[in-house]
Amino acid sequence: MNRFAQSLACALLALAFGTVAHAQSDSRVAKRDGKPTVTKKARVSKSFDAQSGKVASRPAKRSVVRAAVPPRPSFGQLAGLHTVQDDLDLKSSVALVIDQDTREVLLRKNDMAVLPIASLTKLMTGLLVSEAGLPMDEPITITQDDVDTEKGTGSRLKVGTTLSRGELMHLALMASENRAAHALGRTYPGGLSAFVDAMNLRARQLGMIDTRYVEPTGLSSRNQSSAQDLARLVAVAGNDPLLRDLSTSPAHEVDLGSRTLKFNNTNRLVRNPEWDIVLQKTGYISEAGQCLVMQAKVAGRKLIMVFLDSAGRLSRIGDAERVRRWVENTPQRIVPVPGGTTAPSGNIVIRQVNG
Image (tube, rainbow, N blue to C red; front, side, top):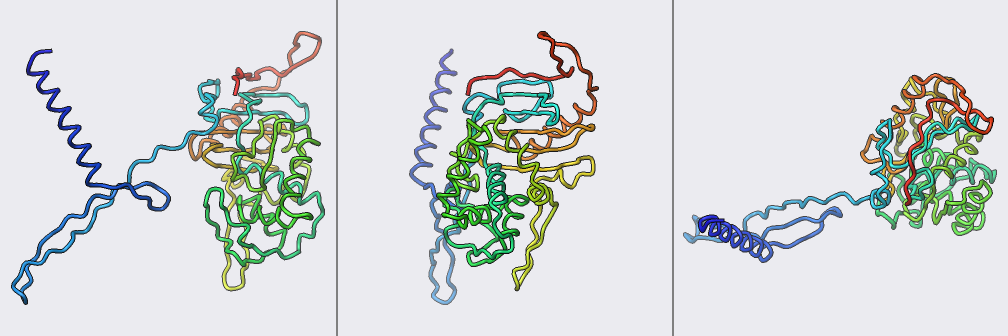
């Protein structure tokens, strides 16, 4: 490097350090709406006062610049599950597709990985309430206990709102309403702790050996499961007429007396005529990524689909569409396999990684 280049590099380095030092001394980091912002030091501007004949100083309007906040990585990303490739180019790091009638595994990808499941939790919440035979017309009032202290999320169901248990079930399963789900667990016989115990007991009864629940909404990242376990849950929940009806409802309105609120299904596929969905549930928290479970009829087959830790807001929908098109375009042809058994041709088995 010649002397000119060395001098230029030193000058640029000194300028950079001076800029950083200046920025640190003349700005402060604040928080606004839960996100960090950088607020520059207020400048002073001067103006002439005609009445007094003096020059007055007044603070200039401060400029606020939001700092870029990188997205928090999911548990699957931290475990390296997204590095696993597959023939369908799925955006979900975990996937499992099963023919429910024949129990054939059509597709698997990291299906034994245990990850946070977000609002897929509400499927177990709904199953327990339904199986308990509690009166669906019983009024339940949203209380301060139902307000989210885990993630600080809001809700259109304000404290003091009273709805029937059936309406809360509808909103929890269709619109993934957190306060509705929490109220269902809170009003279970024995209270919230008894409900969580019942969730874990029912999971063990279903053979969901990798599953753990700590609350009924899915806001906690400690609610965790695997694709294999969730497929078991979907198979059982799909036999419940109430869960099938409520989870696939496109929209629902609730009358609060002074106003009417309309809630939409969080899964846009229920409004797509190309889909025949029997049961579904979506989920999302940053630790879990985008999640989706469905029982759907595709090409004459009743399929259970599980997608976990998908990257991108619409990526779970895109993965479901890829699988549907693949199944529709793959002829069912049974071919012999070693041991005298048979297996469907065209299956995709994607390697498993530890995590």
